[in-house]
Amino acid sequence: MPDQYQPLYKWRETWPGEGFQDFTGFDGEQSFGRIQLDETSHGKTGMWKWNITHVPWVREHIVPHSGWEKTSREACRRVEEHYEKLKAMHGRPVSGR
Image 1 (cartoon, helix red, strand yellow):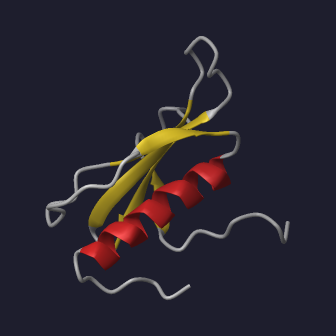
Image 2 (tube, one colour; image 1 turned 90 degrees about the vertical axis):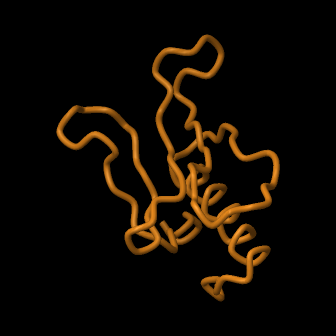
């Protein structure tokens, strides 16, 4: 699908083989974010929760650092855009896309 967001980073199952729709984003060996399908919360069931996880070099944060999206790709986009902003703020190279 050409309109669908194409991730900049590698995403892996957070709990491989457990059957959860839960993925962690990696920049090399550094994890930076997570997306997970909500299957239990009242009012959010079927939506994708996104959040930035602990990144050791981050000294200044941006809010919001979590939220909800309708699709996994949009949740992924939100995490990656947030991470790219953090990298720029902290003088780290960004993807350039």
